[in-house]
Length: 66
Image 1: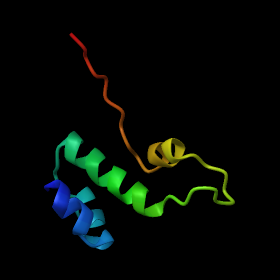
Image 2: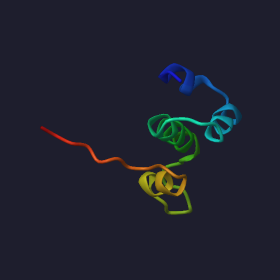
Image 3: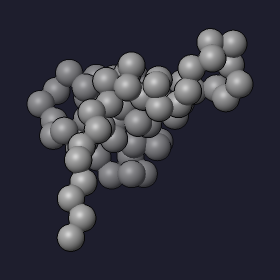
Image 4: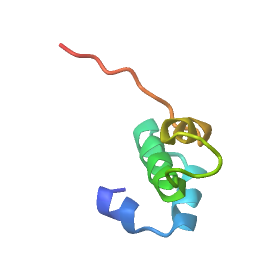
C-alpha cells in the first residue's frame, strides 16, 4: 500500500489487511495509521501515543547507522 492508500483507506479495510500475508514494514505502517486514528491527546486513559502503538502490535525495528 502506498502512503496515500493508507491515509484514505477505510479503517475496516486496513484491519482486513492485517490478517493477510504482508511484510513487517507494511504491517507496522498499517498499525501506525490505525493508532493515529485512535489516539486522542489528553484523554482520560492517560496513555501515551507510543504505549498505544505498542499495545496495538507495532514492532520497533533496529536501525543501523553507518
